[in-house]
Length: 350
Ligand SMILES: O=P(O)(O)O[C@H]1O[C@H](CO)[C@@H](O)[C@H]1O
Ligand SMILES: Nc1nc2[nH]cnc2c(=O)[nH]1
View (cartoon, rainbow, N blue to C red):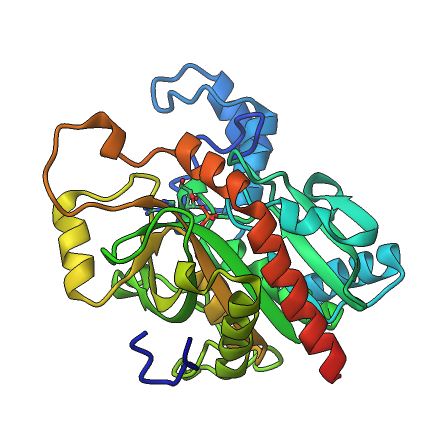
């Protein structure tokens, strides 16, 4: 296998946020949840809202999409103090890839519910745990469960944990995901190393960096060319070769859509025309946030399903989350080995 160059051809589980608004605004404005709950109880014909005070409170927490530097610092301090160690590499586990965190040794585990000001995971295959410990000699922190836009969280909230990682001391972000393979050369179970992305949510005017910029994190207008670290891509390709999986490894372009629907055939055709190789509903906003605060990024997609651009009546050609999870489970060993060996290389160099 040849090296890679920049031309690269190669709501909550208890149902709290069921009415979540993705843009952080709500018709309820900034009024206290208790007022709203009271109004909820009055039957004056103006508001037909069946949420309990607890649900309303959770809804307000969900909609608080600004995380000031100081709040993120508090979360980071809580983790570093609780773990008794300062991680250098952050890992985000994709759907069904939670086992990437299971290989961490001497692990200190934080449930998201117990981390102050942290969102909660609501998607199957995302356990909702932060794991800090040792991997191949390095101190790492892994998110066993990420946050997606379709869960109702604003993008800034989805990628807030990346800033927590930064303030914990993390220099490298490894973002992993399950994705549909649009490139016809990709097979189910293949791994695509991301060398670029098409930010469809960005095209639609959404960014995790929307709102006032805090220069302590990074600049107002960050550049995104060379977001995906070429040295790490080349190292991963070498590791893939030594694992004997080079024919199942590709380098390509990922696109994040808002979800939670999978794509129509027309959308897939459009994405293919745009040069997209794999499609999912995550990762891009995390990468943007990581690059904004100058982290080195490595990201890969596990291809869990093929996205055919031909119309067909066959049910088994439709994407579904059970299949995504089951393919991820079958390929977890290879994904864990790739991650562990890349961590070892980074650690050996430092
Ligand atoms: O991107 P991750 O979190 O791996 O999950 C992918 O799999 C889910 C759909 O099956 C979506 O959440 C999509 O983004
Ligand atoms: N958007 C999208 N996300 C996925 N995650 C896993 N497979 C897919 C897919 O086909 N489309």
